[in-house]
Length: 141
Image (cartoon, rainbow, N blue to C red; front, side):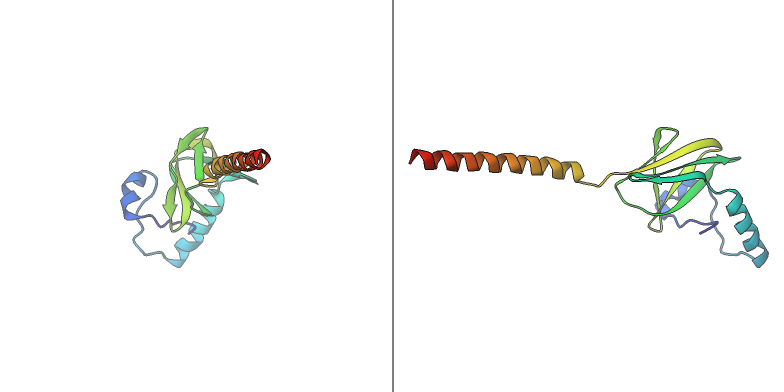
């Protein structure tokens, strides 16, 4: 995956300016060249925290940047503070990064978490009201 990303055919037109289609032929000499280029062109300042990760890039031309992080609907990505699309690549994530210096930030939000909190609060309130009604009825009888 150092020089390739598996992309669904329906997403290929979206990345034409950032990547090229692989023809399946790579010589041993080219493999070593790819390794060297990959090390040179990796993201910089990669940092993880409890909500995701961030990094910076500085490319001479636009690139498709691939991350070996499993794709999930809960991920959001921003490029210089603006939301960008995450491309699903063989179950992992890739993003389009234009040329120049940029900051990428990926944040994860558990899908359904906020709804779960709301349902829990409403359930607790309903249980409290139900318990209060039972106690009130018992005191009247």
